[in-house]
Length: 69
Image (cartoon, rainbow, N blue to C red; front, top):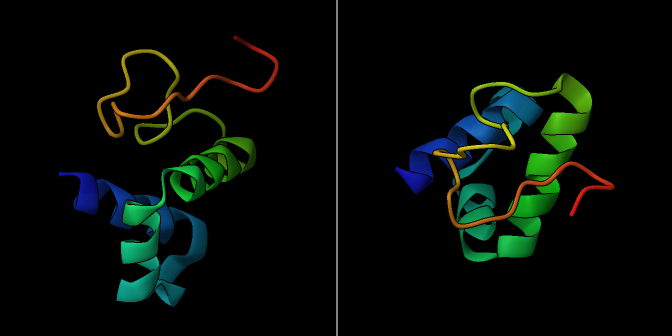
């Protein structure tokens, strides 16, 4: 499930320019995943991949909006 959601996240950000190594790097690095998640939220706002409350896509990371604790 995590690999599929990371792939969806990267496809939303970069379209068809995503490769397997980028997916693996994002899966392995929690900070990179948080950075890319924040990037998508800033660009597109809240969507099914990036939502603050009840996060089912990436339940293991904190997805607070900037300025919230």
